[in-house]
Length: 297
Image (tube, rainbow, N blue to C red; front, side):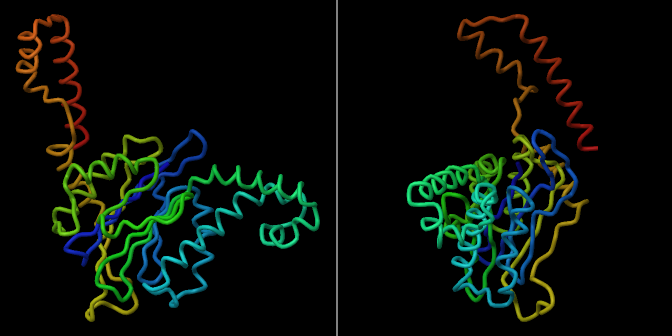
């Protein structure tokens, strides 16, 4: 119930990322500025799903600290994600037996017998189908080209060549927006900043995606960058408001009510006449315009 977006630009030198900041419990959501971007060294992690799962997953990775490199980041993240998913799916089933998944794999058949152990394994496998958490990892390591890797219950997905990725309940909407805006790895930073912001704003139509927005611009580490901070900057909240106003004014898809008479003529010339529709549509247009003026103010 969220959205996380990452897009490579400037031919691989820069990545613009965005998330919402909402938390959902069941059918209740709160836009409470929960950070969904987590930095470990120069690597950015963004998650869609339960915050506790993200925290426990990253606990598998944190001990490696400075040992995370471009050469091992994919395998490290994939293994950590697998372990979190397997523990999530098995803990409730194995808890009555005072056993974890590792012990079950070692001793399950000898303790329960082959048929009972097979049934427990089937239950764990079924439970794993409900693990919907997703993870995006962004960074460079010692490579010139930025990496965007996704982890989900289906496995690992690389988005580095495509140049962008979006996860969460608003992920498909955000990805569609980037596709329509023709985003590519060679896009400029200026274009990409708007495209990523527009993708996030569009995704707010999805369940559980909040309006509060976090946007970060990151780049491959340069000699001039501080060794104590990951290379990148967050876009300030007031500047995100500027991006939203631009999107509401010029980018948000809407029916062109100011051209309503031209639209009506298409129906008329096709022999379709609904006289009552024009008055209702004009009144609706007035309400939409008034609402957008309030949002921009």
